[in-house]
Length: 324
Image 1: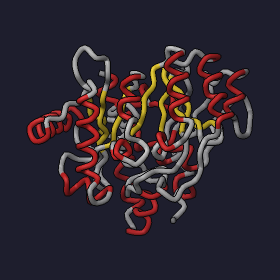
Image 2 (image 1 turned 60 degrees about the vertical axis):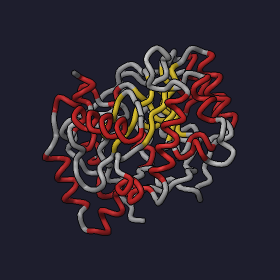
Image 3 (image 1 turned 90 degrees about the vertical axis):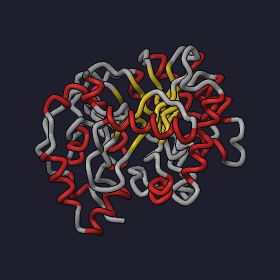
């Protein structure tokens, strides 16, 4: 795989500083039951990195000490970590909002038969990957049979009350472009998804998040191999919208890797760029018990143009929609 950080390190991206820490995004490990082309984590079935019990305990301590409102759990497939359910139960007991970034097919993996019911019982917000409402496009990007299993997962969540008024169970979907292009306008795409998934499969969901593919890890390496890395970066630079800087996710979120080390976002985590925290070389979760990240400068590189291009992109979808 081609290393992309040397191609991204020199940048003219504007400076960003941290505001109050509202979200802790925790990567429980890189093991996944899928291997997707656009995956910026390079996750897959052969990955073995996984957060241990002591680090999960530390996550819970930090959530309390910093009074963090939201725990955003990701991976890999985070549900494959044996600590996943314990972390969810403990965080919910503290009154913390929990988001599970779910690939949907994990709901039908052997040993995970009760996962959907667990998520519903705990009131977990599910943010689920579904890169298209077309079977051909999804299976091309994610593997044969993934679309049908994803639809089955969505139906299981709907049957438990997700995306049903009055239940409080939130189900969001995530769209990624098929290749080296910006996502289309999020609002119109959401309407298309709701129409097609509702008409053909009876699926309901709350919001669609349109995310830009980042030129790092597996996707970035593919761009290098095709000779389109620089042209894609130029596309992101040319589409820069300054107003998106006001709502970039790194201003209010920290990303925690499976070893407990801190990064400004999940993308920086995959590039090995540590966050800045009062001069510490590689800040760790334990440092948040004594040090406040507010006001620190965010580590930026050329991939950051992806978050501010066009309508903007974040873990909560288009920044333009968020600002509106």
